[in-house]
Amino acid sequence: MEIISDPFFYLVSIPAVLIAGVSKSGFGGGLGIISVPLIALAVSPQAAAAIMLPILCLMDLANVWAYRKNWDRRNMMILVPAALVGILVGSLSFNYLSEAAVKMLIAVIAIGFTMDRWFRRKSAVNQPRSAKWLPGTFWGTISGFTSFVAHSGGPPISVFLLPQRLDKTVFVGTTVMFFIVVNYVKLIPYWLLGQFNGSNLETAAVLAPVAIAGTWIGLWAHDKINEQLFYRVCYVLLLLTGIKLLWDGLVHYGIF
Image (tube, rainbow, N blue to C red; front, side):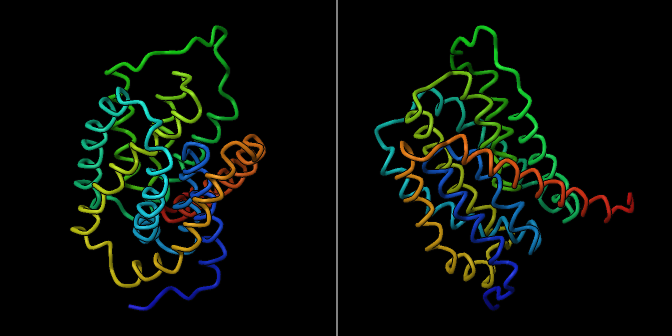
């Protein structure tokens, strides 16, 4: 198998990996969701996910060292077991999801995440919530499943963690610790399902320097870059990508 040489692939994958690295190491990883939808504009969603997984694992190593002392143990105890169940469900359903179905699933996640962030009304009281087992188990399971399918486990985790109003560094550190477990566990079913062919692995290796650059930019930017501007630009890009993937799925099923 040869490394992917299509220029359009690198036109979308380089910014996708950069954004994922910056978001993951600097702002809690919510916009890591953007990587697979963007790369799926050039290759199949399954190939996009397989290329991104080793890259995410590489990012995780650097992030764990940076945030090793700043994470919430109770949240990890609640979320990790639930995420493992979600990964198992994703693994068992993998062969039943067509390329078009995966595109539409990713599109719904991308569009829904963007709309939620844009139109969610702030609580009038805005009191911090505690980390409870029932909602944590639910969102942890959803995160494990969506993370397996499209590395989009960030939004469900954010839904659970953000209302707790954790310290910014602790919030990022908790997501870092959560996803290093999730991503390294996912290596096993991805390998068993034959996702790591030569082309995907070699292409991931080519993008590795971009991943490292994005990670270090995120660490540097954690207290320096205007977080709101960064997210606004990325949300627009994520919405447009989701619309494109949704259109492709609808066309495939003959709806348009």
